[in-house]
Length: 541
Image (cartoon, rainbow, N blue to C red; front, side):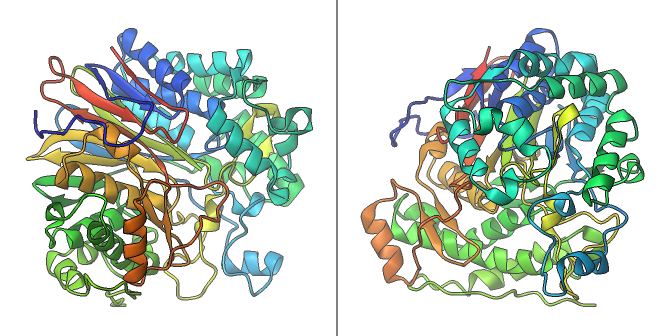
């Protein structure tokens, strides 16, 4: 065992850690079981992750779909690999395109509709992972999802709540194909109601038969492009056919004798690395675990990281500072010195230029571990659906900027700033944990809080899931989850933190899935946890 946890349950929770040699942890039980089916059939953790991811598009469509983007970090038994399957802008997208359609005052592409849809990458991620690392035939991996789409699934409580909230957004509900697909009987499904997506089963079969080519140049691509053309969008068959996911080397930072790995930009994973690098200069473990002083240091470190990330992170080729500069030890030490333990501050970027989401994890007894995330963004994403295929499209294009001088300025074929980030923890070059926390800008904040709890305070993975969280919002105010001690909240206010109610009806304090390796995976196996903020399940055998 690489790390000794306190296995007590210090927070109110309906869940306990799951110990097994083969594990899948997701935010919906049917998806976890889809993954276990692959493992029981002789597949590996990659096969399990793909099957779970495909099932998630049906059982939690308010967070992801067949038109999502995806990222992955995996340990193949010998080394780490990263996969960036975020899709780029259509070839027609330029600042002039958006200004002509949406006015000169527009600061970013719209949140909904065709002009928020970049090329969807999740299906390509499934294919790439299967081809390089999978054991079972690709079509077998999609069979559980096809069955769910045809027979239907009973809508659980958290999914029903988020679905209902999304249906109340008029801008979303009015998008082409949305009501037809996701508002049966003219409303969102209720808890315990059966929901079917036979059109999605049709798409999954086409994807299975063509290993994804139906979406990237075939009949699904043609349907998508035709709908875009008729409804005022810019996506073409050529845009889809040109897409390939990118294998990348994860970026990393040490913390408390362990190493955190994240996908490099265009995503925000670097924010978690920077914040931990800053926080490493403080003796956090000497402070009470849920006390004001500990929370304050974490929050200030996160502020400092976000200040640089929001200023500089974009597609790597257009960044005006490098990831190496942002992660430089001396630079992060200098940023740590700016933290005042006695007061909250508003930090600007320190570097200057020189020129709705689901997360799941799977691990098997051979030692393969997979950290996988896919998302529509903002709940149902763009709201645009191709009804004949059950294809709901993300709105990642909203992550671009229309401001001249921004490194994230929209351009043809460029990838937008991304919020979804899988994570992976190692120690001395060996795998320790595959994990992630869903929820927009909560994600790096969730990574930070999780590792502080596990490595500084030795809280076990399920306790880490259940512990109350804080969240910095885009207004630089602080949201505190119910369960944060009252004296901690009051203490943060005294230090100058401005507390605010969470205004976003879809986002919350995130939801995590954690798989921690206990030793030899074929003997001791893993400890897994699933966040009680979702309908999920950690399951194994």
